[in-house]
Amino acid sequence: MVVRKPEVLRSFLEDERARLEAVIAQTDSEGVKNLGYGNHMADDATEAFEQAKELALHENAKQLLVQVTNALDRFDQGTYGSCERCKAEIDPARLEALPYATCCLHCQQRLSA
Ligand SMILES: [Zn+2]
Image 1: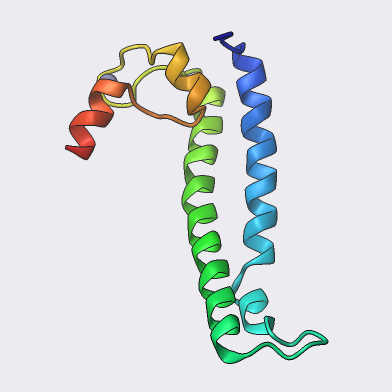
Image 2: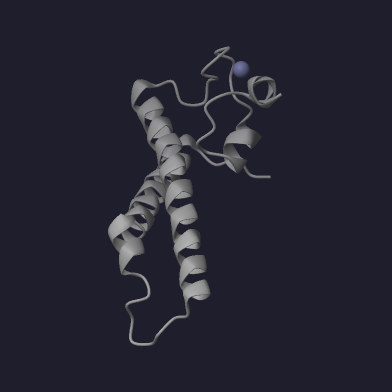
């Protein structure tokens, strides 16, 4: 696996932030409320399903955006790539897979245990 340079990870995070903000804007409460007012009539079940899907997408995007913004702040503070908890260096392969990871695998496992 080729490990990307920090500036590449940073631009990935910036792109991701813009994408998430767009998702959130599209799926905010206004957007959810307006679903089903298109040209064709949606039956209630489909409409409810679509609303639930939009809402899940919205919540998911909001949570991710917090993590992405946090990672970008850490770039600014010069602490990106070190564990938030034990201050150890986060495995570059882990950052490659999860650029907004804020703690090392060891701490993450302890957190989710
Ligand atoms: Zn740690």
